[in-house]
Every structure is written in structure tokens, then in C-alpha cells.
Amino acid sequence: MIPALATLIKKPIAHRGLHDGNKTVFENTRSAFQAAIDGGYGIELDVQISSDGHAIVFHDDTLDRLTARTGPVRLQSSQTLGQTEVGVGPDTAETLERIFALIDGKVPIVVELKDNGERNADLAKNVATCLANYAGPVAVMSFSHNLIGALRQQKVTCPIGLTAEGIGVLSLDQHRIALDMGVDFVSYHVHGLPNAFVRDVRAMGKPVITWTVRNREDAEHSYAHADQITFEGFRP
Image (cartoon, rainbow, N blue to C red; front, side, top):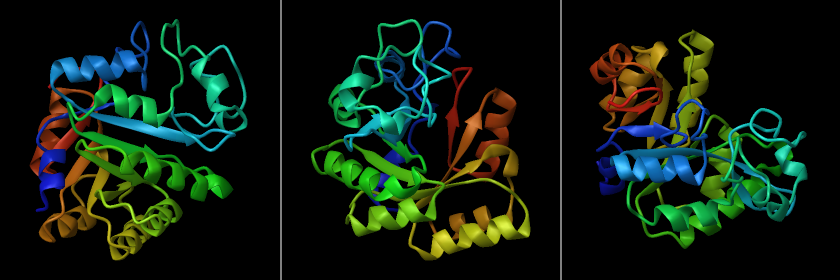
């Protein structure tokens, strides 16, 4: 296994940072990431594209759930988003570049690129630029085969993974397409384990992490079939 992947699976990974269910510490914020660093956990985070082409650390495609603003993230500039409070403050929706500067190699990072349709190439390009200037342990992943291809076109050198779920034949066949694209690891829904696809991935020497593990029982189930957990709602 390449060293970057061995580092990736060394520690449990805090899903969207070590937040508290968006009560006082909100997901995908500086506060959540600092809490994960302080706890010694890896960090999973999500990125969307802004109107001016920056990767913004935010899960949803709209601002409605976590901010006082509404509408798609992709229609807002990075400057406006940087002034948009997430939850009750003081955190805002920040660029990946700024979050990389905060984490600064202290713990491993897994960046999930969310599907932005016709803006996928822009998102992959900016993520690649951020990665080129980052020296810490990091991997990228996506549900989208299109984004995986776009990352390959950008000649990203860090590990590239597939985010996946499902247990039906059609789902597993689609995942094998991504495997044929040369993904280095897989992040699979914990309640989809075990399955033939995940067994094949591990047999190839590629690690499998799981999402989202919310209790110790699911953690035990995950470790029986995969290499590391992405967790929230408890501390493993």
C-alpha cells in the first residue's frame, strides 16, 4: 500500500470535522476541524464551487440548511461566502485553500468533491491548485465518475477515491467502472457492507473506509469488513 493511503487509514476520520450535530459546533467549519485536530482524528470535508471558481468547504448545494442565506452555493462569490455565517457563528463558509492553511498537515484530510454538473471541471481545477500547494497527507474522492475523470485530467498526484453505496447488481457494476478508472481507495456506506465489490477492492490491496458510522456497533461492523471509519455523533 502506498504511504499516503497507509496514513489515510491510520486514524478514525471525523465526518465533516468533529462537530456536535450542529448545535454549537457546526459541520465543515474551522471550529469542527480544530476540534478534530485537537482530538487527533482525521478529517473528511466537502467542497462545492463558488461563482468565481473557488472550492468552498460546504456540503449542501444550497445555503438554506445551515445559513441565513438561501439559494445555490455556486451562485455566490467566495468573498460573499466568506462573510456568510454557518450556524450561529463565528464560523463562515471558507475556501479550501484557507482550510488547508488551518489544518496544515496536522492530521490526514479526505476531500469529497460534490457533483456540480457543468461546473465539475472548474471544481476539479481549483481543488488541484489547492493540492499542489499543500504538503500534508490528503486524499480526494467523489460519487461522480465525471469528477474522478476530471481530477485525473488535472494530473492530481494524491490518492483519488470513489464514494459509494448500494448493494444491488446495477450499483456494484457502476462502482466497478470507477475501479477500472484507477481509483486508489473506496469510501463505502457502512450499511452496504459486506458486498462483493468491497471484497474485491480489498483483495486488490486498496483500502476501504466507511461512512457514516454513528455508534460503536456500526464501528465494529465496519472494522469487520473495511479498514477505517468515517464517524460522527460519538468518539471512537
